Length: 123
Image (cartoon, rainbow, N blue to C red):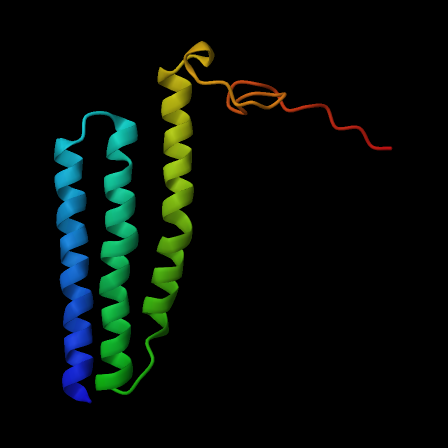
């Protein structure tokens, strides 16, 4: 049983290292902010998440105690990484892209970054 758990922990650590390496390489090779945005969000979400899962497995199975801190950190990363990426992408779009350069949305109000929201009236 211990050998299987150690192999599983090693698997998560190796996969996390690969995602960390690919994320670091992506930060160097990708050209602009929107392309570079994918590298750190994937590296943190999958890379650091894998290390935390490996740590939770180690403490749960090998040491016999549940580590609540790693679970909270994992949930925090999974919740904040996409939101942060969304804010960075919107800021980049607002600073570097004109409304005329964007494709049509096919909706009545267009891009929310450039158009005011519709008026809401209470009946």
